[in-house]
Amino acid sequence: MWRAALAVLIAAATTALSTQALAWGGRGHRTVAAIAMLLIPEKAARMNTILGKLEQNNNFIDAASYPDEFLRSHDPNHKFGPWHFADLPDDGTTFVCGKCLFKALPANLAKVRAGKNNKATAVAIAWVIHLVGDLHQPLHMSGRLRGGNDFHVTYRGKSECKNFSGGEARVELHSVWDDCLVEELANGRDPQQLAKDILGNITTFKGRSEIQPANSKPWLAWGDDAHALANSVAFDGLQDGADLDDAYIKGNGKALDVVQRQLLVAGIRLAFVLDKNFK
Image (cartoon, rainbow, N blue to C red):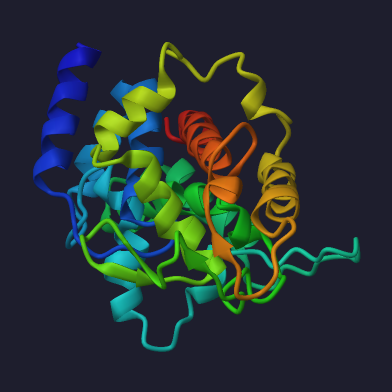
């Protein structure tokens, strides 16, 4: 039964992929969703029915980019802008969230938990899928130079790199992690195939170390982990204006390795929080 549901979901997502790429990039966000879908196929199929109420991106995989590809263009005052990140400080000082991701995620999980079959629930599901992805992009958890948006680099000698839509993204360190690295990792694979390849022989989130700590607000620790990666990998040893080549991109513990791990961990954790909150 679950295999049939999964096949329907994959077919729907494959025919409905949207084009605009923002945040992790369209491919990154959809890959996180596709990993979760493989781990909770029956619940994903049920959520897919509710997500059909969205104006666009109305399936489980595409909904991962609904906040970027639909809501952003309908939010002229950028009231949702702070939801996508948390500017965690590097000096250990107390972080005050305001309207950041750490408040947006549990607020939307509460709407998912309420279990209503309406558009508001569909929007909340889309936000949860998206925010768990954002939580694992290291520069969405860093306050340094606006999460790397004000840190200028080139990528393999170029000032632009391809994004999910086939267009070009201007290269700052933040966009390197949103787009350039994900596109290089994918090497042409669509989100469904990339998800399968990253997931490998993992068949469940249950019992996985990645879902720890198993408390009421695990995303706080997950955000700290991503913030640490921003410092130890994303910004490590770089000066403004650097060119990012193989020494930065490839190798054990280097940028591509970290991106693959973060996509995997995000998908596993997304399956965990949705399974826990969607009944």
